[in-house]
Image 1 (cartoon, rainbow, N blue to C red):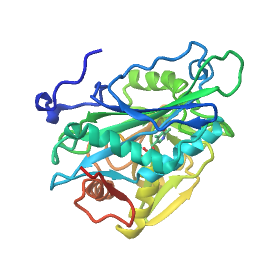
Image 2 (cartoon, protein in one colour; image 1 turned 180 degrees about the vertical axis):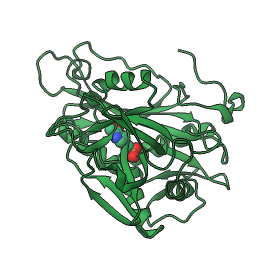
Image 3 (cartoon, rainbow, N blue to C red; image 1 turned 60 degrees about the vertical axis):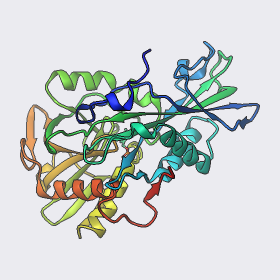
Image 4 (cartoon, rainbow, N blue to C red; image 1 turned 180 degrees about the horizontal axis):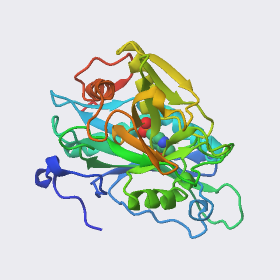
Length: 345
Ligand SMILES: *Cc1c(COP(=O)(O)O)cnc(C)c1O
């Protein structure tokens, strides 16, 4: 595998969301009941036993967060404590040993600092995407928690999700479910994604950007998209997002619930969103770290496309939410207490 080009050779304006083998990643090993200190390493290949539970039984979870370059050249993280806490919850669900939150944040910072030249310049919209990952490894064949674990954090520069402005896309519903009612939908685990590849592929082939999954028990309520939570805006200035035990608690979602209330004067609502009651929304979108907000032009359900604001233009409230959150992440808008952590360079 070729190493990433030197930072001076990267076309920052045209970065996509692609793997790059950067100079450094963090790697820690859990054995005999404890984590070692971990270290930065140049080796992007993991050497693991063929019996590793991650390979057979899905004992694997992950996180996704970004480092942002500010106007004055600083580098900062957005709410990494929330990723640390969520990964601990995912680990608990899969009987994996959690990685201590303070060490998680320190390791994220060490990876950003070691690859600092790969954090895209301010103004390009690019960021350094960080991927913490834990897998069960070691000699094993039965269905048991693994005897050993690896925790790694690797990074890569990614481009602005939208070049030339935020644009809506259409989504569709599916016969398939993403997660079971009391399954692992709340946890950021690899297994949730394997099953989403087929419905996602069918949606893409039909011309939609992704699936809006319905609640697995009744198929009457919106749950979330493949890797982003759903919101709708009502005429009464409400910011509405589904509440369910089988959706992934998005940090972007909880941040936008707060900003809608405290920065935009909206009423935040977490509750049921029925798929046959979309007329209540004037705008809608999908929320997650990758795109921040992907505005939803329309949702196809039972062969009919329900259009919210417009299939081609982003709505004014969605744009304002997007500008506020990205403004905070890039350091241009004052953040609520505790949301930003600077990297000491
Ligand atoms: C990661 C993820 C999200 C988005 O969460 P953020 O913390 O906002 O990035 C939403 N849904 C699923 C299924 C996810 O895995």
